[in-house]
Image 1 (tube, helix red, strand yellow):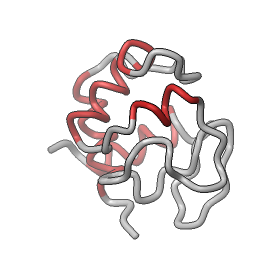
Image 2 (cartoon, rainbow, N blue to C red):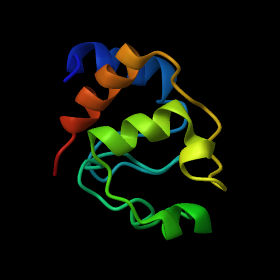
Image 3 (cartoon, rainbow, N blue to C red):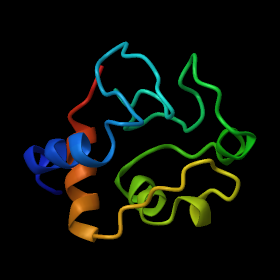
Length: 103
């Protein structure tokens, strides 16, 4: 498990322009990520997901988020997400932070 404190800093630097994280927060270019861990991709209400995301129907966990963040368009061909996180430690820290955003 990564460093959630550093993960929050990375989220604010790398992700906050496209995603919110607050409970019941609005969607931006990407969906609100509060409660993402354990959720099936493409099921957050009020966000217009691509068919590719809806059809993938995987559950977000450390493994799936790591693969998605490393190579989004390889993991889910047809996703609109083009931003990726090259550094493995940064991915671990981001995922540790996202794990703290529970309902």
